[in-house]
Length: 74
Image 1: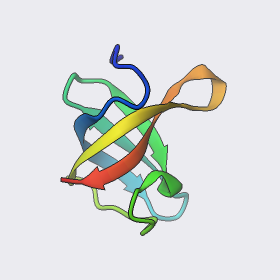
Image 2 (image 1 turned 120 degrees about the vertical axis):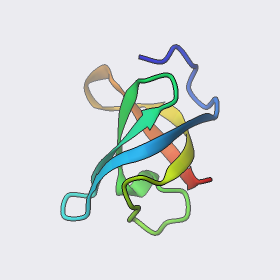
Image 3 (image 1 turned 90 degrees about the horizontal axis):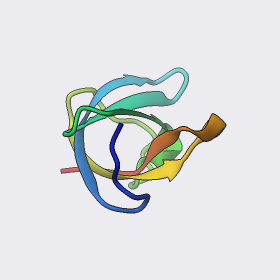
Image 4 (image 1 turned 90 degrees about the vertical axis):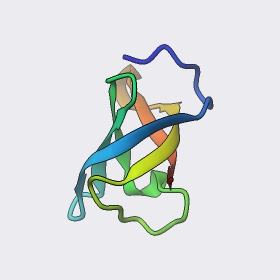
């Protein structure tokens, strides 16, 4: 898991996104994986393809885990 503080920009790649549920996963460059909901995509599109390089920041998620937020294609 990344030791980066919430709000600090990170870089990674979307490795999975399910249109039906709106949930996906970003792999950060440091090897950590962070889930995200489509509402965390910064442009409001609510969809993104796997394989896209992105920047994002961390936000507290459900059950004490971290989630990706502010997801922006690079």
